Image (cartoon, rainbow over all chains, first blue to last red; front, top):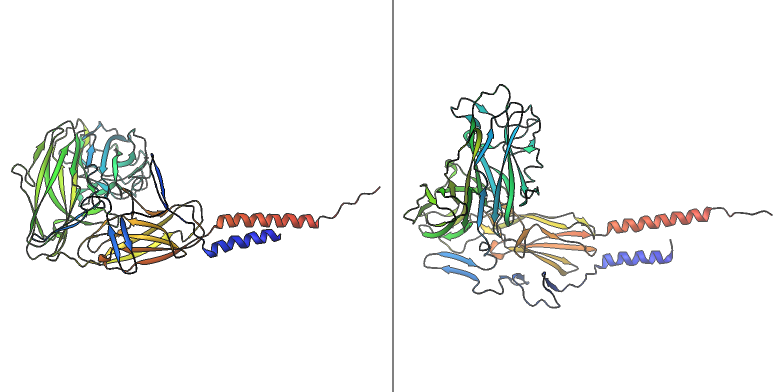
Length: 254
Length: 290
């Protein structure tokens, strides 16, 4: 090993142990400007010193806390609290009537609908789903049970692969998409890995609680999800029209 | 679309004394092309997990500390009402805390669709519901003694290369008091005693006796607290500090940035050079004969 190589290595490791820190200044940028400041002149947020800690809001009219001492009500006003004025919390379902047509034994039948949700800054959202009961004849004499998927492991809260035409039942798959119905998985990949993963609907008549099928922890605008309903029956299933009702509940994260 | 509803505000946060009534106006907009029949209800919930999700309570689990009603002459809780297509209605909700009650109550104002759907053969009908949360702390004292605890504050990975993936800072804020508060604070990264970066915590609610994962605020976006490469090698400290009114001491952790991939590459090159040099020295000189 040459002398110069050893010297290089020594200098290299000295840099590590001397903890040389590059100097940074404040940098602002957008698509139309770049501003680099050598001084930190203004900032909002939290500031501390050995003897105090301060949080503040800079650059708006009338920030702060307002107390109604007569009625005992407290209001906090500031940028960090005004997250909800950008757009409203909204939820839509593309189709309310999901028709499967005449069910054919050992041939899975599918239908789809689209959920759309917007949740303003400062919150995320969750969409929960449940069924009033399993698909059943209008005279309540027979039901199509909820699917347990190919390996018998899917439940109302856990998804699994369901591709076999000899596995019977009713279930759902939910995939986040964009406005062109291209799968993105946003908001749903933690619940359904891909289009082959299905779950049961939570059965309210069986005292099951509605389950989350889509969620995000942060603001979302016009987020789409494709819901695929799948039903497969055996040859011994009683003939007739089977129906149930699915409730989709959209709430912000608290 | 058959069901397309908006509600503002999406959440109401209150601190009120016992035996007090307040009102809140909610704007409900029917964005669909057809009229929608709705029913307004109030349902209690508790926090479910550490990410802000909720679980709705059964009748046995409810502790009745609030009364709800509306000021509207034509909209009452539990009674159907209709909003025409592309129209909005305002619900003025009256919230009354019961006398001699102290503590938190978490509820959701739900608007549930009641329209009928028509199926041709076998099928399923969809019903839409949208909700707005109501978080209420009932206390005769305006200055509440909050108590937070920082748990599981750590980085992944602990030893980081100077390039490639980000460093993520994770932690839980536990609420050991009976009233909800916000995760108001910051993470200060220092190196060699100098501030390297400050991350502001997103002010997320932590319900009473629950925990919440920390997330950070950048402009108007909420995302995991993270640092992006490249990094200077060295020893870094990360200190999570909460608002003093949460009465918890800061927590500091240490992580290391070491260019182990670059060092490994340089080391391999030196070894290779050393081996080649050795081979050249050992090669016997070639003799030519005339």
